[in-house]
Length: 377
Image (tube, rainbow, N blue to C red):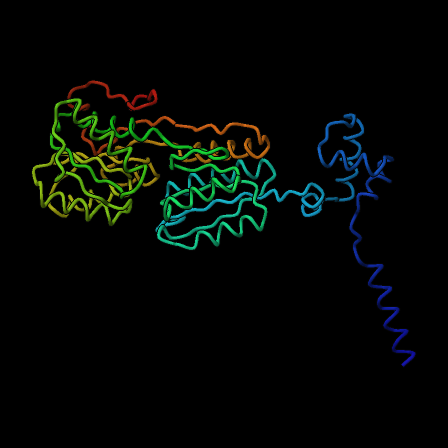
C-alpha cells in the first residue's frame, strides 16, 4: 500500500511539472514591473495609463498568452455585456432580408465587445413572456424585436421594463425604446409611379398581412400613387400574400381570377413577387410583355430569377448596423433620448417591369428612382 501511495504521489508531481500554467494578472504586473492596479486599468480601458506603460503591459500579455476573463470583467463591473434579438417569423432565419439585418446587428455588437443572444419564434408563439423573463434574469442590457409580433402587449411590457430596445420595422417609441425602418410609403409609391410611367393603369398589389406596419406603409404608398394620377383604388386588385413565396403565388391567382385585365403588379416583398411571377407564368402570362412586376427588398435572389426582378432596394445590413449603434448609445447613456431612424429606399430597374425593353427600343435612359437619389440603371 505504501509503494502504491508513493507511486501515485510521484505521478501527481510529474503531471504538475508537465502542466501548462495559466498566467494571472499578478504575473503580468510582475513581468512588466508595474502594480496590479496598473494592469487592471489597462485591461479596463480607463485611459489614465501612459502610452509607454500600456504598450509594455500589453506586450507582456501577448508574451504570456494572457486573455482576460470575460466572466471576471462582468462580475467586477456588475454588467452582463449581453444583448438579445427576439425574431418572430414563420420563416425565421430563412428569410433573406432578416438574415441581412441580423448580420448587420451582429457586426456592430461584437465590435463593441458584447454578446448577441438570438431567440427565434413563430409569429404566433404566445410564450414571449417566458423569453422576456429570461432576459430579466440574465440581466440583458439591450433588446431588439423584429418580425410579426404576437400582439401589442409585448411592446407595453418591454417599454415598462426599461431595457434599452430598438425595434426593426415596428414603429413604436418609448422612454427607452425606438425603431429603425425604411421609407416604406415612399418606396412603394415610387414603384407604382414607375409602373404608371410605363403606361400601366390596372396595377395589382400583393400585400403582406395585417396587422403589420410594413404592409400598412406600403399599401399607403400604393394608394397615394394611384390617387395622384386619378386612378381608382380597386379592392379586387389587392390580396394578402403573407410575405412568403407561396403566399404571393396564391394571392396572384386570386387577383387574376377576379381581375384578369391587370397589366402591372407591385408586391410588398421580393419573395411574394417571385411567387406572383410563378402564378403569372402558370396562367400563360409573359413577364414583362403581358404583365410588369416590381417587388420590394432587393434580396439576392431578385437578380437571379428570370426575368430579373425590378424592386425597391432597402438596406438590410445598414438597418441592422443602425439599430445596433442606437441600442449601444442607449445602453451607455441612460439620459439619451431614443432616436428613430428612417432609411431611404431606391428603385432598382431590371427586366421584370419592362422598362429596359423600352429603353433598348427608344434609346433613352432610365434612372433608379425612389426616396433616395439613385444611380443609372
